[in-house]
Length: 270
Ligand SMILES: N[C@@H](CCC[C@H](N)C(=O)O)C(=O)O
Image 1 (cartoon, rainbow, N blue to C red):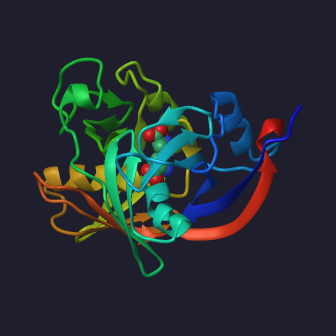
Image 2: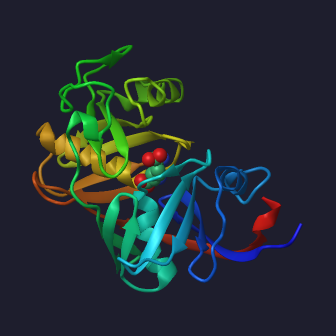
């Protein structure tokens, strides 16, 4: 087996952790099996998402995102905040979800995450329905909202987050046939003025300490339901993000980004 040595950085946004590979100077042939093996916390390097930074004709860099199950997806809010730190300057990033403008701020970054999609077929859902209060329920969790912020999210506003069995309900809802592309499952509780607590069961990664796109989707749903107005603090297990969205506009996400260490690996081993 010929060695395929390459450098990577371990980074995280609020504890949602990434192996970030610079593929600008040479293509790393990333397959689903290889991404899954690298993300493995016991036999690999370990991460929630694997991020490939590449060249782009349309932006400063491109970003490809792989969940820890190896599946390639469109968007990752926390990883997007890490890109200015990885590249060393403010950047326009080409993703499967569109072009995202990421600017470094003290300790992190602010990202224009674009406009949310709210139509049922853009989520996507299996059939037409209202996405603000979906006429469906799972056990005693009724009428969630659905929002696409590049990737698909369903949001349950709960009275008591502590009473929800997220590890049982999360995978059940993630793989429900109502969501043909599967879904990220957000469990939210409004805990104060413009302040939401949020726990996310991520599609293809399970429970993570934070989900940036989940925070964006939840803030959008909360504005639509008039539960919040203006910049909203979203408290995840790993810490806080501030999400600002007004109807018709783009979502602005601001929060931390952290570089942990750099390493070198032989990708041919994975
Ligand atoms: N952790 C991310 C989201 C990663 C992708 C997601 N699991 C999906 O499958 O869409 C974030 O910070 O947004």
